[in-house]
Length: 317
Figure 1 (tube, rainbow, N blue to C red):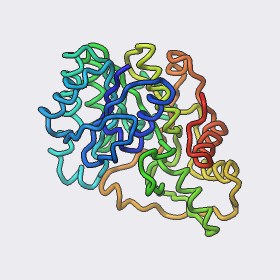
Figure 2: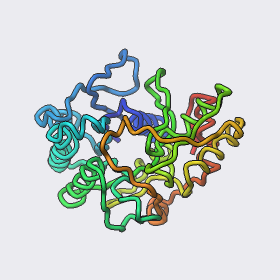
Figure 3: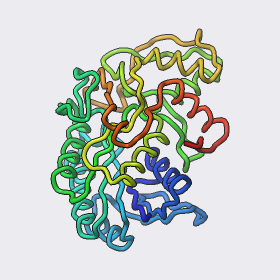
């Protein structure tokens, strides 16, 4: 299989690339805005600005992939709100370009989307629950989903949620707590390992969700491709948990001192004016059945993540 991954050098993208190569023997090309590597990587890197439609289309035409996974994002909420045109180009126009190119070469198109397409008042949202985003990021993702589901000849949307895990291409990556549930498990582990109190944020932020492990989500994306599934899928775990519950479970799974966990106010400097959905829990029953994949419960998710941390490798499926 020939696979083109946009943003494959990012956090989620690095998991898609690693799972595709190591578990599915795919030949992978990834776009990158600035990351170049040293030439020893088991994949090819094409420098592409996602706001340049000519270069983006050329990357597809030149690589002639069997499937495209669009995981690249403008990962800067403050900039997104400050420059709406850039945000639209980065999310919407890039998706339009990729769908048109995918149709041109006969490739399957998979968009990585988010649980933040929901407003936080739709608990246990299914794949068919109408989205209702409350911030610009969610709006841009919903528009992208609509483009894929309505104009791709062979399209799918893979929603991920509260994504945690390993960044396989950055040794300097350090997980930090944010108003969402993504990177939260790593932040708790890093905090508690110092032996100092760790304040679990509370307030008008993402307090309940269905967390995911990036490598598990990547495996589900590959199954969407290999089984040629179309439509919308929730590539997440089978667990719904609140913020403190996730922190306590993390402490237990990593043999850390849960008594160091406290509560404190959230820091919204990274998300600026964006409202945050409070309850983004998802129901992924349809996805589990469609992909013939047992959704990980919280214990399995945490055990798998610990294996990645302790051994710097993927756990076999």
